[in-house]
Structure formats: structure tokens, C-alpha cells
Length: 81
Image (cartoon, rainbow, N blue to C red):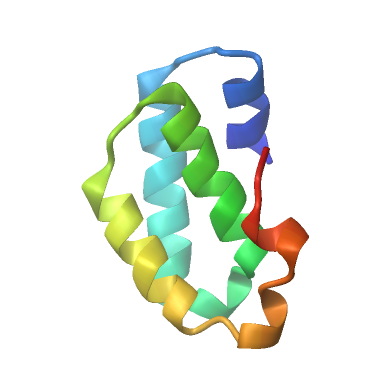
């Protein structure tokens, strides 16, 4: 949610986003079950809104998404305004 808040406020702090990306990547690598469809959506949407490219984060989140149960993909979790 931290990333989403900064993105909504249009506060483009690349150092902060890089730090939070590293944290998310580390947590996903250690235990992908910590993430659900909505959390992945919020993280990736924040980077997309701010137009910050992070190929490592997107690759790790893609792999994490593959381990999320299909039932977790409700419309609210997938669509992120």
C-alpha cells in the first residue's frame, strides 16, 4: 500500500521505489505465499502509474502470480484503478 500511496500522490521517488521493489522481490523469493492477487496488482500498478521500469520486479511478480490460487483472482483483485 505504501507504493500505491506514493503513486496516487504522483510522488515519483525512484530511490524509494527501488528500495520497496528490493523488499518485495526478497519477500516473494523467500515466500511467494505472502502475496495475493490484489497485492501483486497494487505493486505493479504503482510502478506502471509512475512509469518506473523494473524488469526484475515484474519478472518476480509474474512468477509469484503463477503460484496464486485462481480463486484469489476476483475482479477487485485484478482491476486496479
